[in-house]
Amino acid sequence: MPLPSPKELHMEMPLYEVINLGAYASTDSYQVVFYSGTIDAFCLECEKEGVFRAVGGEGTEAAISAWDWNSMVTNANTIRHFSRQFICARDSEHRFRSYFRLDGDKLIKIGQYPSVADFQSPGLQKYKSVLGKDRHRELVRAVGLAAHGVGIGSFVYLRRVFESLIEDAHRGALTSISGFDDEEYQHSRVEEKILMLKVLLPPFLVENRAIYSILSVGVHSLTEEECLEHYGPMRVGIELILDQRLEQEKRQEKETEAKKAIAKIHQKVKE
Image (tube, rainbow, N blue to C red; front, side):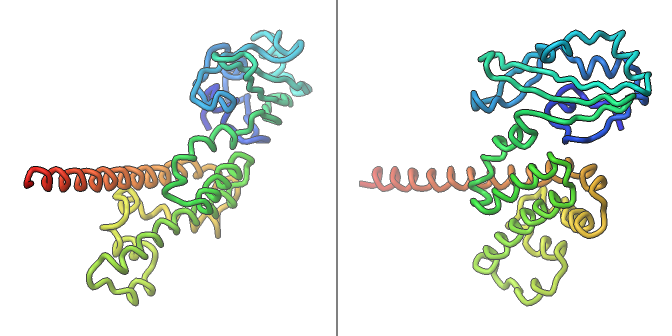
């Protein structure tokens, strides 16, 4: 596992995940843990994307030097708790904090505020129009569970979201696809159903229909750790599908508006 970036460590990594610092040079891990630059992230209080600047930790922990860090991670008897702070560039009262426990060369993230789910949920709001209230809530739950280290549960909700997209297309096919064989559809495997509905589904979903199989294997066979390992690509895949749905909806809205406008103009010039 590669050393996480400062943003991944402080804002995105689930709680209680262990990083074996012995696998990395202490200077490299120090630069990540005690990062002193800026991080682009959504500010919940500003309600918009912003820039957070590192301002050290709270209390005496801000004074840990690279030399001290090297001594700490190479000492098996080390037990140390510390925190890091980042402030919003727009308002210094808007702060983010992450909390850690160092046990020898094992770094454990033990706290974060705002939470990982809090940071990621605002970016999901745009999908509400595509998914509806209930399915959007399930997507948010998937993100929240993964943020707290629950891999299998996150896969369950991601699969439900994926299934809802297919069922939406199925209902549309019953009225819009001439000669659609619903009996064959009902007896087909999910990947076969997707091919039957391909004209109504986002291209990314059709091309990557194996997402469903991966999510199903995760729910039934994979461990929590394996699901968490694969969660990122699964979530991105579903978001890309939803992005294509949004693009389709916007294009349809523009087409409808354009047709009405053209018809109105045509009627006017005929008079």
